[in-house]
Each structure stands twice: as C-alpha cells, then as structure tokens.
Amino acid sequence: MEDFLIRIQGDGPMRLGVAGIAVVVFGIGMLLIFSAVLRHRNTGNRKTLTTKQLVFSAAAIALAVVGSMVTLFKMPMGGSVTLMSMFFIVLIAYWYGAYVGVMTAVAYGLVQFVLEPVFYTLPQMLLDYPLAFGALGLAGFFHNKKHGLQIGYLVGVCGRFLCSTISGWIFFAAYAPEGMHPLVYSAGYQASYLIPEVIVTLVIVSIPSVAKALAYMKRQAVYD
Image (tube, rainbow, N blue to C red; front, side, top):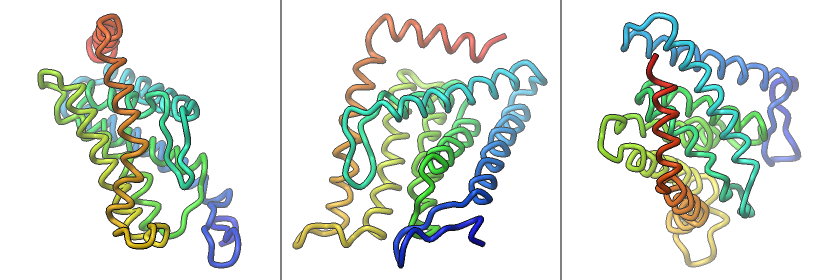
C-alpha cells in the first residue's frame, strides 16, 4: 500500500507512490487510445486521421504542460495564470469534437496530477483534476459553430471553474475568511486566476495573424 499511497504527515494530504503514478500513467494512455477509437467510429476513417488525432492530442497535452509551467503569478493554495495552457486542450476539442476533446482533457488533468500527485481525498482529487480539466473538452460541442473556438473555450473554462469551485467549497471551506460563505470564497478564488488567463488568451487568439495560423493548423490536423 505504501508503494501506491504515501501519507505526507499526520492527517495531512497524501501523495501517490511509484505504483500509484504508474497506474495513472497507464490510465492516461488508455484514455488517449479510447478517444481514438471513438473518433474512428464516428468518422469511419481508418488509419490516417486516427494517427493524426493521437499525435496532435499528445502534442497538445505536451504544449499545455509546458504552458502551465510558464506562470504570470501563482495562487497560494493552487491555481495560476499560465501561458494559455488550457487553450491547447480546447483546440483538440475544437478540431475533433467533444468525444476526443473530453478524453484528451481528462488525460491532461491526470498528467497535471502526476506532476504534483498530492491530494486529500479521492473525491477532491477527481474534482480538481480529471473532472475540472476534463470540462475543457466541452468545447468540442461548439466545433461547428461560428466563433466556436472562442465560445467553446469560454464554456470549457466555465466547466473547470464550476468543478474547482465545488471542490473548494466542500473540501477547503476552512480557509474561507470569517463571515464569508465558503462557496463565495471558493468562487472568488477560482475566478481570480481563471479570468485573467481567459482575457489574455482571447486577446491573443483574436489577433488576425494568430487566427490565420490557427486556421492553417486546423486544416493540417483535420483534413488529409
């Protein structure tokens, strides 16, 4: 059991051991393969698109991880304004739809967990990682809409905001200042780092040259 979970101290948070990390990494791989199978069934395209999908999904996760390490500022109890890290995951959902988008986003959430595998309870971990980041894949429901990338990005971030806010409200209520409702505190805390990143990201992707580059990338990612 100690190889899987390690109690850091007393009744404090737990950390995954080597065996636990190995299980999560295996799960990430299975999620990406499963997302490819779903896309294959929806499109009927056999090999080329599926291979592209896996490559671009893995590349998006890598870019998102790198972006998450470039921070404008960090919050004291988790969360930070990053270099468009969420946007790379939203791109996959926008290109390939909600099925692949959600699977890739959940995989990214698990990667973030592996990078810092500390948690208090299993429900808290699920809310803060696979569910919160997985919500970014909801952007895929707007992949055929006008301005679908921007709308999907906002919806995905709102999904992450909701999951993180619920987690903060339930599991970290003790940190709320006296006299402030934990739900209000949690919502304000999540908004303080998510909103600035949303504004920066939307401004950047609205630059004409960036928008043209993204359109070119979509053609390369989606079409033969």
